[in-house]
Image (cartoon, rainbow, N blue to C red):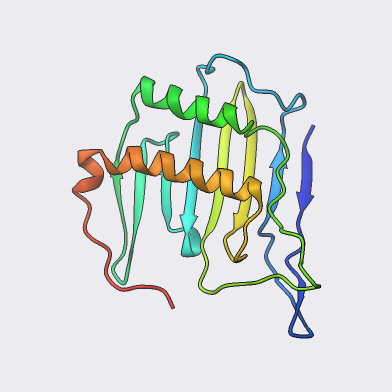
Amino acid sequence: MIFLSIGLLGCQQNGKEKESNNEISKNVTSSPTKNMPKDMPSDFNFSIQSGVQKKNEINTFEGTVTKDLIADGTATTEVILTEEEMKAIYEKMQEINIAETKEFTPKPINGAACMQEPHGEDEWKIIINGETISHLFSEEYCEPTNDAKQLIELRNYVFNIIKSKSEYKSLPESKGGYE
C-alpha cells in the first residue's frame, strides 16, 4: 500500500500567495506497518540527494558519492560503507522511525511562513525488506518542522561518515556559491 501526502507550498506572505509548481515536502511511504524490523535487513540500502538542485548524493545502491562543485559541476567517486557503518545508520533511522509518514510543511504563523532563497532540498529513497520508503522536502522554510530537522540531522550524520573517507577527501574542492 502506498501512502502519498503532499504538503502545499503555497502560503500567504506580504499579502501575496506564493505558488510552487514542484512537489517539495512530498512524502511517499510503502511500508504498511510503518515499523522497522529490529535487525537491519540484508537488502537495506538508501540514497540521499541533497543541496541546491539536489546535486550532492550518497548512494549505497551503487556505492557512490557525488559532490556538488558548484561552478565546476559535480564529481563522483566510489565509496562503500562498512557493515558497521550501515548498521549505525540503520539504528539512527530506527530512532526517528524513518518508515512512518512525516510532516515537512510548517504551519504558517499569522498567515505567513518565512521563506528563504536559495534553499536546498533532500530526497531520500530507502529500501527495507523489499519496501521503498521515500521522503522529499525543501529547506526553503526558515523554521523547519521537527520531522525535517530529524532528517537533516540524519543526513548530516551520514555525510560526516562519508567525509571521513579517503575517497571523498580526494574529490576537488567546491568553487563559488549559490545566491
